[in-house]
Length: 224
Image (cartoon, rainbow, N blue to C red; front, side, top):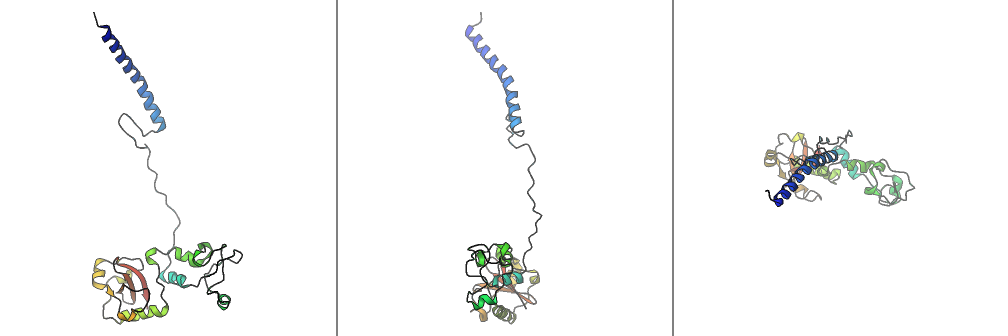
């Protein structure tokens, strides 16, 4: 005669197996409905769909030339906050009236309380130009006389033009060969110019490039 306790255990195991055979497909179906990529039996947890491609903007941002960037940087700006009732500036150019009134720049313009560098780019051609200049290509605030002094001082140096230097531009990185063979400290004749301390130069046939030594990055281009 079989043990009654054994019969109870066998019946419980059979009931559990029967329930699992019914509940497992239902649970899997529920999981599939929630996330088709989730399969608990094999540990699959990916979404089950193709990843979305990265968005591609059709807008092409035109980078300013070094000349345009420098002209924008050197353009006079208003020093007085705008009251919001003056005509919006679209040129960034100075005003003879403003100069005679002693404001030190164009009259206030743009949204209320904005002035100079804080005028949104849609109201200021100057700021719109500078907003599109890469950080490493930001022009140096040097006058025409200072640029000429640097150019003449470098060209008077006996160093030779470097191969491939004509292709450089602000924010370009020198090749190791260009840095080793063509990067030189600025001549002593330009030591008194503010803003060029610690910079180096590399010479092209008719151009001079100012270089940040530690990064070997061109920070300014000076034409004849």
